[in-house]
Image 1 (cartoon, helix red, strand yellow):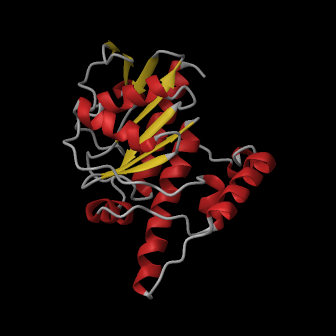
Image 2 (image 1 turned 30 degrees about the vertical axis):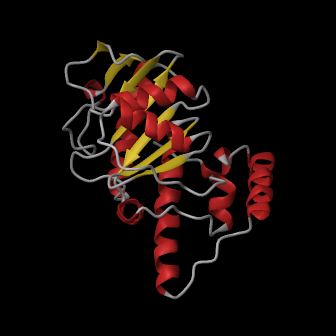
Length: 222
């Protein structure tokens, strides 16, 4: 994918995330890997529903700006570190969706409750300890808790979702919010029973074998 195509896709994902209430106002950020050692990232202080392709900043993995007229998001350290340690990650979305953030504030991880979440994400979503965002310590805390997974809750802050494409990261962010909502609603009824860990593994393996991580069926158009 060319740089211009990726810029347009980041803008489209930002608008979609805003429409789905994963982002609000100027909070949150989106990035995508360009080649092996470059990253395109949303600028600081911009409403994600009003971005233009020319607003997106091109940086290297050390955070040096290659092309762009705006200041990048303050979360450059965490995006850069994830890309450095996870070669399988090509896109990152940092959201502030309501239900997932509510759990992040209370320090509760999201268990695997539904077969859909088991299939497409395949693991419970852990919570970091509280660290001031935008710092290297915060980046290291996120990477430690994310591990090889697809999402992590940021204590008192929000969500990081990753994927091998912008579509994959966006789908993960949506599923995390949906699973968080299901958990909160089920808990209000008395008890939210997680799926057995072996069943989660079986569903995840079947999903990868049968759907190639469901890219064909998902068919998101940005």
